[in-house]
Length: 456
Image 1 (cartoon, rainbow, N blue to C red):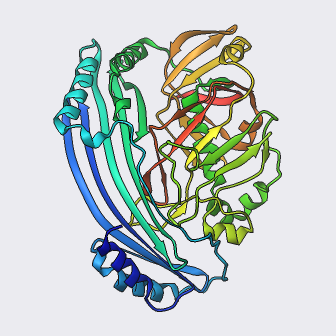
Image 2: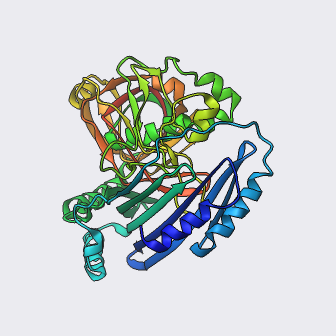
Image 3: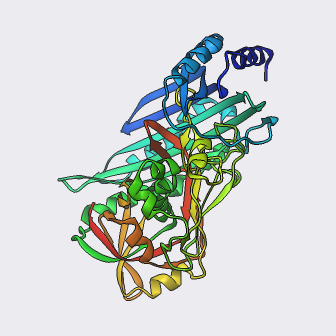
């Protein structure tokens, strides 16, 4: 930590008394390149330096952010005055043994070492592959890399500097049947490894061919049926449908969910195990300390079908008398930390993908994703690829479908979990106006009975 930052932090934490004070200072540098249709429509390089302060009093927080870090002491005074307006029941926050640590970024092939023109040439090449295919009407490509340094210090004596480098790529090919736009795509990401976006010619060509195949593919009529989800779509399912309900602030603020989501409740079969953890190494949701200075953990959420844990900040852990998990995260210095997922996965089962498909007489094989949404226990999300299963074999290509349902019913209807876990790092999560937060999710192939599907 440089001397200027140290002096500002020291002066800020000396401000008038409150129960607890903290400061975050953040520097970031990001590159973003976008293509839409057949044109490169945006290239941007953005840098930011700023910070935020937070203090606690009267059972609540005062928060203030700033772009001029020299104003941090003044902003701390402001946050303390804001906190005094709280009239909430007081709570004790978890205190870890103070640490002073600097954590270097995970780097494999550093995106900062790649010239901008070389990044553009690579993306132009992928665009040309897609547009060279007949019936393709255009493409969407989004590339981004971000270098982020976050310094956290608090009145308990913590001094934590963490450095992150993220790389993401989204590629989609568009076709049309004359009435509607059809799309096939994929998203990938990494922590500090540019090589994941290189040598993708085969994947990009496959993406274009899948978009072509959709033109003549029939639609699925709305019905309940058996579905087998690939690792990516099953990962989206566990994130969207279950992960958000594992975030303790969502539960603490809803009396109905408190009753439903009691620890010890059976929600699935004995082979269902779900985990979240920033401590899982070298994924986009990974870190050593969260944005409250709490050490990251690997948190069991469901074990043998039973709800055994949830995700916490210091505040929610105190209010619910549960163990803090290090899941308080902020997308940038402009926002206060809130309870967020990190890397959320369904653990491997004992079956194989082949056995699960072979054992399915009639159903759908759904892969990849477009997006999803939840409203408490109700969920809807969309596949990017759909195939018919008949007598244990994958048959014709179908149009993408929407999968909808009640989480708790659906968890009980998972009756097959394969042993081929894969992690998807290409997504970002939104909550409370903070998006896209780097997260990962993953799963083996899973089979769900009686899932409601409809035309996408």
